[in-house]
Length: 260
Ligand code: ADP
Image (cartoon, rainbow, N blue to C red; front, side):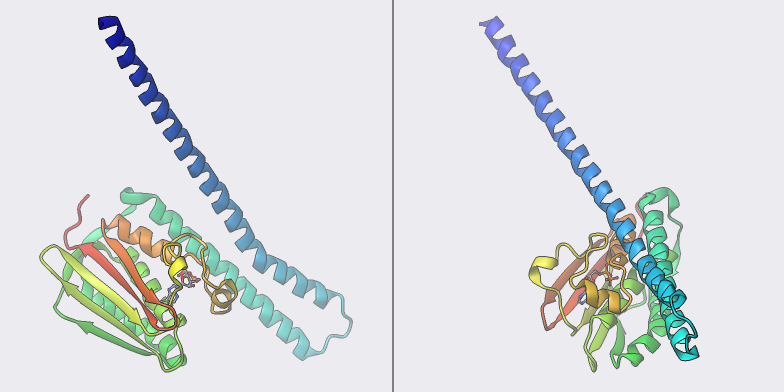
């Protein structure tokens, strides 16, 4: 009976170990696949502006006696592609900084109302250009322990998106509230909305609902990945609620006190 017991027991232990190994292998494989996918996405995204620049430069080189206006037009296009390449590289660098996690976080006591006001002030001209009304409502003064640079980047990306993926005459409402433990920022817009099946993918690096639309308006597909990482570094959370054609609301929750 005892022998039986031992054999049953060791069998189940072996089984548990082998299941754990399988699980570990599966996780490593997934990690490797997502790393490969990331590298291939980065290469693709960085190559696109370069290819355009090469085509533009080649067609300039291939012509004799180019009229000045045409030359200017091509150079302007090349300049725009350089700006795009720069934006992708800057976003990638922000993302890498966030990936390096807690060691890199610089926590100070910050007036969140003022931080939001500064972001709104910076984004107002962009909103005005698109005829989008930008409104902020804060229910109480909030002071919290945060990394000011990272939080600014995260909230800027959310508010910028709400302006970008909007319609002329649309609006963006930003609100700030708090309870005893957390503060909450909501960014609500009445823009184009996000299809249901895309809602759990928008935080992935380089994921864009409509690649050409996002590219047209200067998107890199990294904004929400950066925002999410920054919020996670603060031990917070981000949620999205959206209806296609009606609008989108992002809600951010962040603890008032930093938990290391
Ligand atoms: P991008 O640089 O393309 O804006 P993000 O990572 O910031 O990349 O967002 C990913 C995608 O999520 C966008 O391309 C867009 O399709 C969608 N999206 C983000 N915010 C909004 C919003 N407020 N309204 C509608 N769609 C949005």
